[in-house]
Image 1: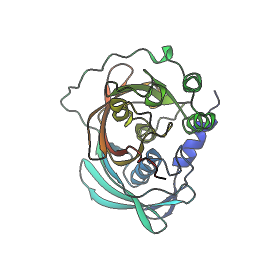
Image 2: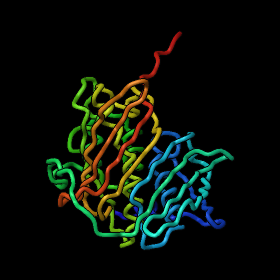
Image 3: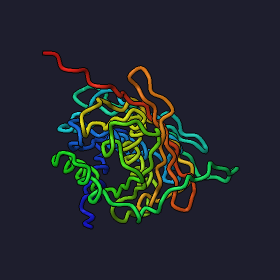
Image 4: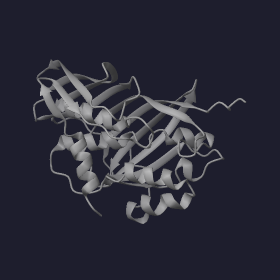
Length: 292
């Protein structure tokens, strides 16, 4: 497969520095007519990382999606150097479009050190090579051809394989609020550890709210039976990993209420190491019937 989509994504995440602590990023249309949340989160983390010593990597991020992003306009990222300690470095990033903040991120970076070790065990999952690719699976669901084309284009830089049918693949009947996907970059990445963290951040927003839809038998935006958007996003990076090697994203939803749903996930390396924990809340609403 061509590495062109991955190269395009890496170019998208490579911000322009326009002043000290100020960066500018491009955008591009997402599956829905707004900036993809994973893109703005990944770009904000790049901006923060550009102001941190190379020996310190992100160990956590906490972010809020404040306004819908305009995919036709650049995004300006301003970095506040909140703290530079002996072991930890803290940064706050605000993303601005048209004079208004659309996203805010706080990230903490740590210099590597030895420590106590334990982790939750990796759940069982089939080998990723035994699962159909997106190109093989998505057209089989009978979705509108334009929808399938948008989905394949939006995910062309990532090889993302569902363990079971996604919400839009089998909807109408509630299922267990849990889903799994394997993913990796569609090509080789260099050895910069921050790049692998940024790529995982980008992908983490693609499927995390799926388990909410499964619990209610909803198919999502692809079939038009829900309206939703990300509200906040938090990640903890526990152990080193490579985003160009298979990672298992195990996701579930413990709750939905008040027009909001919560998704939580754990990302494991193929050999069973817990690499990342993720939590996200999103708006998930059933569209109101149109009145005559």
